[in-house]
Image (cartoon, rainbow, N blue to C red; front, top):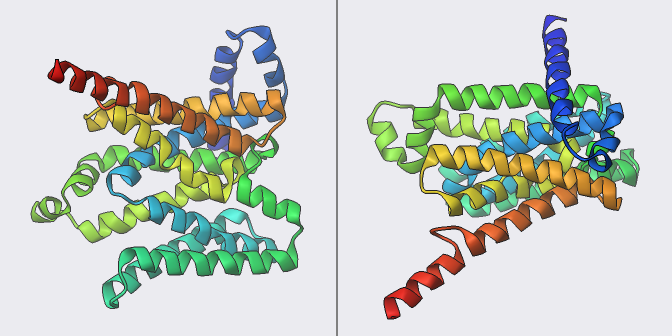
Length: 307
């Protein structure tokens, strides 16, 4: 298929670039990446870190952290049903994630239930349904990989999916940069300027769902929420300019993914957990040492004012 050939060619090219960078590292760090599965894990981690970092800015500024949590849990029954039917995980996960997102919007718009309660209702029900189905059709090993990720065992098909999802996210953000920017900061002004805010709202949710599905095999359903929040929150402490925030957030996501992968190999620990812990560590460093919004800088300004 032309699309598959194009994706494989891009994967080979990106892998070659990454290996050129890796070969600049000390031999002790570069040695594990001689193996093909480690190269796939590295490229997948970089892609997931970048795409989660970009969308993290919108999640943080729109205060959609609970929505990201809801979607990530809601994909579980879709994964279980896809496993049962022998379909790719992506299909079931994306369909159930999208349906849950639409259900949350319908409950919020047509009942007295508020958004936070609607999210809580939908994602807990969907997550429970997924656990019940998986307990009947799969082993605990499958459940652990779906919940917590296994980037070291990522297959070429999953890497191809992650690459395509990353391309869709980057192209969408690039083409719809202005409408997304206006909708993020001032939905009323975006609507007054003639933009269809309902379309933008659900489009952004579907993009978020696609990102979560593409990140399943890397950090898992539970930990992908952290990767959709932490890079954006860290970048938000470091800058007040949105374009810079996007770049910083993507860079933080990539650094956390790569360093977390290296630590997971060196310490023989779960890759998803290591990636999220590195991202959290970067956040706390920024929380303390950010030039303008860090705790140290704020205390310094207060001390200067008093003296």
